[in-house]
Image 1 (cartoon, rainbow, N blue to C red):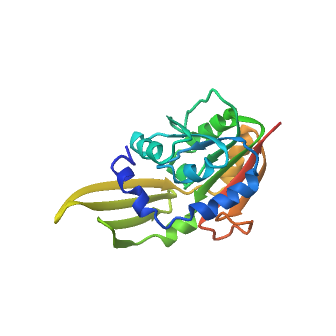
Image 2 (cartoon, rainbow, N blue to C red):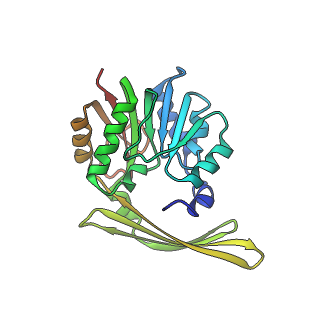
Image 3 (spheres, one colour):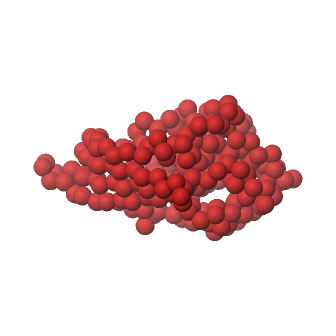
Length: 238
């Protein structure tokens, strides 16, 4: 399962990700009321920590290692383990979020549709669903190999995008220093699928969502051509 050992190095690799800046985009849409929010695929809780200061938040992830880190980091949020393909909730939420390109990890169209159906069931009438996705353009720009070092972690990263299948391959060798001059090596391969926005919109409409808006890179721009990341803001029918 991905994100097991990777969970231990995830925060260091994501040190420069603009969580606070992107959260401002979310706040502008969700407002200031103390609404009930569900965060899917919450990872190590970096968005969770910010959102939990403003909203009544529940969060889940499929990785127990990720959840352990998140629970140690954020104390005022209810966490649980679930799979975004087939999750069910006892509560209804005013908003559901799926951030940090988590949906790109669903390689099958039917799994994406299944998740959208789960979200629809979890939302209150007129509830808001916000999620983001990496684009084909981003994957093509990332198609290269490089090495880097962050603190006690050295890694080599190779990226390949299969244009026939719209599948991106991340292949990463990690070397984590455990004591002086002694490193532990582990390997991760992650696959992400690029979904064209018309296909995503069609699946959302099939489930029953309305008022589908698409933004560029957590900015108030709908000029989405050549965007690295698309942010979808949709509503459940009342």
